[in-house]
Amino acid sequence: MLALGKLLELTLAGREPAEKTQLTVEGVRMRWLSEGALEVRPPEARDNGLDLLLSAGIHGNETAPIELLDRLLHDIARGDLKPRARILFLFGNPEAIRKGERFVEQDVNRLFNGRHEQTSGSEAIRACELERLAASFFSLPGRQRLHYDLHTAIRGSKIEQFALYPWKEGRQHSRRELARLRAAGMEAVLLQNKPSIVFSSYTYDKLDAEAFTLELGKARPFGQNDGVNVSLLETRLKQIIEGNEPDLAAEGLDGLQLFSVAREIIKHSDAFRLNLPADIENFSELDVGYVLAEDLANTRWVIEEQGARIIFPNPKVKNGLRAGILIVPATDENLA
Image 1: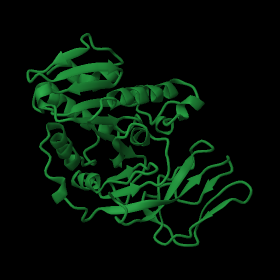
Image 2: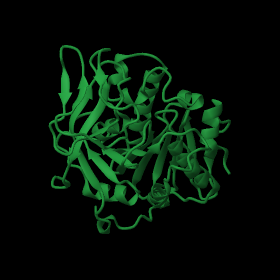
Image 3: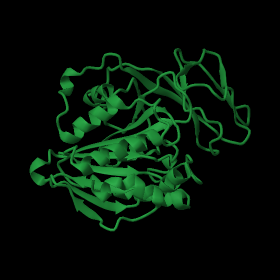
Image 4: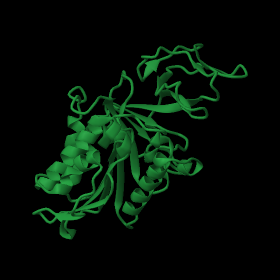
């Protein structure tokens, strides 16, 4: 196997490869760009016009997606997986991955779309570098652009595998892409309706990629991910990479649950209180009239929406950041 196929090993060791570019026996070019960043380019005659960005480890303790990308890279380096797409593999926060922590000083996935310019430190610099790498990768005209940012959650979930689909003014969500997500094992998709500061929102909004944050289960340490079943996603990614994906027009959306954002719960001060059990699961339903959260100046978030559910509740975020998302069921009426 080519040494560059061991990108994770290099990243964990904090080493640069001796050779920055290598070719497989199939003529696939692997090029190391910077720490945790590797570009894969098929021979020109096999290139099908897709640019695929696969990122994981934006949160360093979310290891199942990191291991998934590692397996794909090993297969490419051995010649077992023969790409027809250009691919950029990114391990988002190498320092946090090495420490086995979600982040070191700042949550990298809250530092995109200009947010890194408002702060400092190594993770702000890394978010800027990730934007630069993505922008350079997606700079070739006339090509399809797809980004999957792979995560696992810090808590359990009543719907274990789901996706977040970013929003941009004047752009419709794609039925075709939702069918692809369903085939990849996603049980639900949250259709967002406002700008965001996460990585997939940056590539969707600024780089015109079809982009998604994928939540694949619960975060566990390296080597302990038997409970995170990514087999459907892994199969679909191999099909996308090799250009032999089944016809998406025949896939349909049957069984895929759609949700939209009703409100975001913003923590304004240290007095903020989220009135939920610490171990509550994502997609837990909340009754109308329930006082979800309280803050300074008698600020209260009271449930008014029928069928409301909570995802990503986290009262420990910094002031000014989102401490949870209130979602409600959605329909497929406005899909392109």
